[in-house]
Length: 273
Image (cartoon, rainbow, N blue to C red; front, side):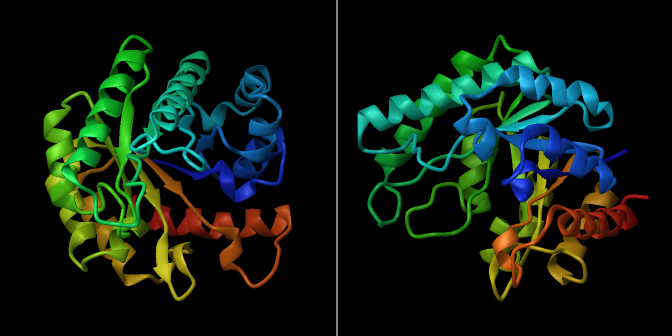
């Protein structure tokens, strides 16, 4: 049976315990906790506070962890940036091990220049993945790499690129981001599912609309087809809603976010009842 949850970043302005409470109120049974969730990140990564929230909300366990990506780039041409990025990823994995997380999702990085990635950039990605495998292999926390939104300097933003990476790293799982995939070729989202279903360990669910990615899914035809395909395949992993609160016309209260999230959870449940 699938577990439906949400990224902690939808409630980015709240403390850790409040975020867990809001997700539970919305009917979630999972959470993907970004270590860059502002209160947690700016408070020095208080693991005990995260542990306390997990203990107080057992219906959301085990949680998934999303590694830090916002100011980092493991494929940078700057060796210092590369090593800092690796260090923070491994630190996120250590946090995941301490809280018995089900998964750590990571991003592949990007070419520093606004140009298409070169062979050297993919060599940097290989270096990063080897380093992550070394620091994570004894933690018991699986690692999954996410497909990226197509941009000129993005890595792993098409199924054929993901295919080579997953083939080269059999230990690595796949986090499918439906919005990132839907931005590209119209067939990419279904190709990701058909090609890599046996490697999918986590799914970020959101739609693309006039405002961009990470919008509500209810009524979106591309996402409906993808969810139907996943259900037909028998997907039973986590479904993590990634909603961007800036896509709404005004700032939302916590209660309003809960109401929106509850509707999205019910929408997902219709595909996997």
